[in-house]
Amino acid sequence: MDTRLLSSILAGVAVFFVLLALFPGTAEGPETSIRDSVRGWWGRRVAGAAELIAKARLELSPRTLIAITIAGPLVLGAIGFLLSPIVGLVGVGVGLLLPRAYLDYLVRGEARAADDDAPRILRAMVNRAAAGGTYPDLFAAAAEAARHRWVRSDFEEAQARYYAAEPPADILLGLRRLQASRNLRLVVDALAVSIRTQQPASAAGQVLATLGEAARANRSIARQAASESRGLRIQAAILAIVIPAMFLYLSAVNPELIAPVTSTALGQYVLLPAAVLLEIAGIVLSWRVTRLEA
Image (cartoon, rainbow, N blue to C red; front, top):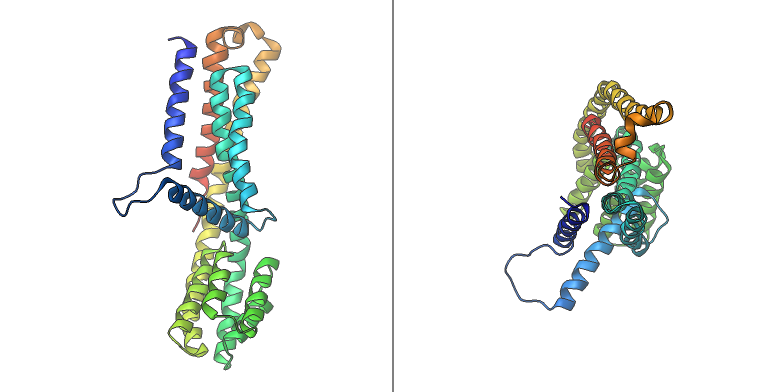
């Protein structure tokens, strides 16, 4: 098959799936105008980007992040098309995935750091509740026990907003949006339910004591999973390095052996881009399989 025809087919398929992702079908309901649909889609994108940026603790506006996610595929795709159409499609795919993958990496790092703080925070809040403390006192105890600077800052801000007579529901909603840790989100949810049902802080302390046991169990499982997956990650990293290293070695010592890949149209437009794509896919899949989390 002609490589141009193949590239056109792949480009058409990629555009089709991108359109499906951007404009998914909706269930039957009241008819809305195209302008309302576009505004709703844009609002959801901005809100999702803002929440992701907040969890990653980046000083970045949501619109800037959206602009990067749009410009990245275009720039990398244009650079790739200078080499071959298939490399251009690979560049588009990398541009679509790279910004979100980087933010997910930052969010996972924040989640691990906050999860390390969760048992200490829960223990401090339970002790303060047992001593007759109020909800602001629980926030203060959490801030004092936290070692991660963002977690400490979040609870200090929540305490200040509480004393400023802001609605507790708004305070806890804002606090939850900032938390990348699942354990801390559960803590905020427990506090929100207790406040909404007008439970005393002592009753919330009993709920938090139960959550503390679950948080400690989660941390134990996470450490065990990380220990068991470390060897698998090393093996995957070795394989990811060895294959490109062998190609570079052969290109240096015996170029004739790999000439069908580097000197022919089939190699340049099909085999080499496919090898790069498979290498990237193998690294991503290996990382996802070995990333065991509690």
